[in-house]
Image (cartoon, rainbow, N blue to C red; front, side, top):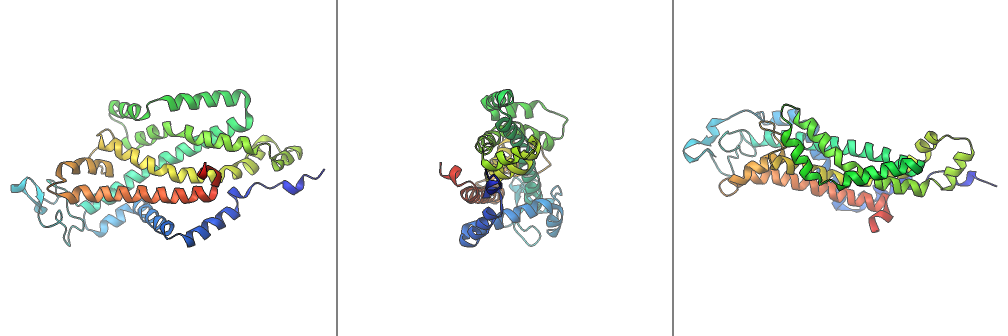
Length: 311
């Protein structure tokens, strides 16, 4: 009986899949553009203070000379006060620099989205692998916990939790609240993938060879679920960004003067007819980020999890 011929994990988490990703990147122009947009906003998130300093204004600095007090605080000049001093114009009434606000808003919005996604993926992978591999009572308990969490009206619960919280770190609270409701989706995907992998020949070979459960999980199961998880994670980030924006738009997210895209869009609604730039700039940034991550996630899903992408 020869077991060594099938003792390697499937290529979904290996080099073959990543060669396919690189080939697809060379072939699809839309994928290149999406990756460039994602990289641009990721750089903006990491280097927000340095980038905003290029414009010469901080996100909380007032420039009363840039707004007209006799016109209700509307920006002076065309396109919402766009000038050599204020590259994207200024905020009505306060005169705060819109470029600096958008850059720092990207840092807040994307930091919340990335951190919440990391929590969701870590918890979902741990729960899904444990439920799928160990089965029995472990699977029953974790599956019921998934069902219970998914049965909550998550947006209403988020609004309620954010509304009653007062003197807390709003950014940290949003990360935890958003992450609380996202993990069951990842856990279900990982559980199904683990169930299909744990009886493969290479896993049986490792088990017969004396490997313990944790060694099998680390060397054989996790590489096999990596592809679908990466694709699912990339598709999840746009939803996290939109959730943060929605909570901030509703006034229960990040509080002023800390900027976020959702908060800026909510404030810009009142000025969309008199100062459309204040509404359009954060809206376009939010739209481009969500679209880029969605296109990138669709491409990765088609490559790394083709059966899941076509089901």
